Image (cartoon, rainbow, N blue to C red; front, side, top):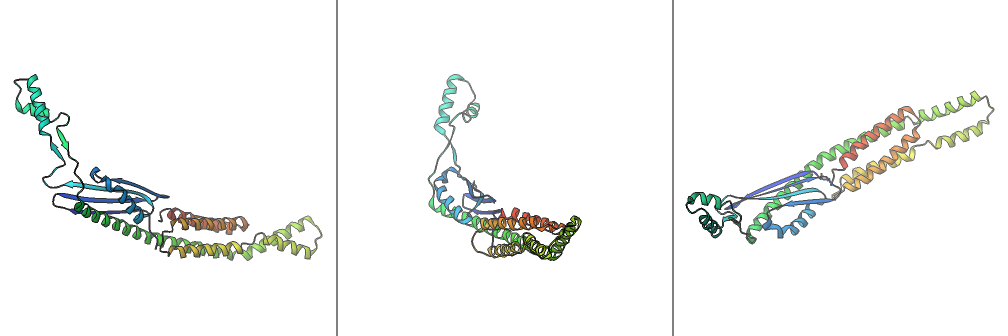
Length: 286
């Protein structure tokens, strides 16, 4: 089953003093483009986290966000009491009769009035955070698989259309050959030239063989079946599907250049249109 590279996963957990939220967003990309946003206190865990996400998600432009919301009385920033008292004492020497409240308002705005203490990682807390990350990762994988089901339906529909159009194009083959024969004979009659009928038939067969599309039809049919077979694979196969569409395009283009028939050329254009729609969606496949 194929997966889309587009996805979204979210998970939350409420601890005693904190609310943890993890969001993972993914868009299509040729490779893995991973961006992480998390509080600085957890930065030492980033390398392992990136490795975890790269294994789980494989490809895509991925944005990972870890939010920590303090819901208890504990805060990361604390009043730096000695510094504030020092500011107040200094300002009293400048303005001896100043109101204490006004001095306090000015002091708390001064540099270093608030201090942020960098706590060490609580390993037990990180285990809880890791569970949230795992849940969000599972959610985005589920999202990708769900999108993959829709993509697979779209691909099978387009492949069926190309097969139908290919059969329709082949149905004009006999008419096309007769038209070529008639056109050549008419041209010779207009020239009023004496022609050896046996030699003419030999040359005609050689000429018509150059416009034969049987091989292209067989190869295209094989590519279409291989595309369907690859869709059912269990591994990430977006790149492989892209290569198969390139081969399909070559056979369709060759059929168009050989067709030499107005209706057949119209059908080839329709086949190209269906293939382009497949190519656009293949870019989203993991």
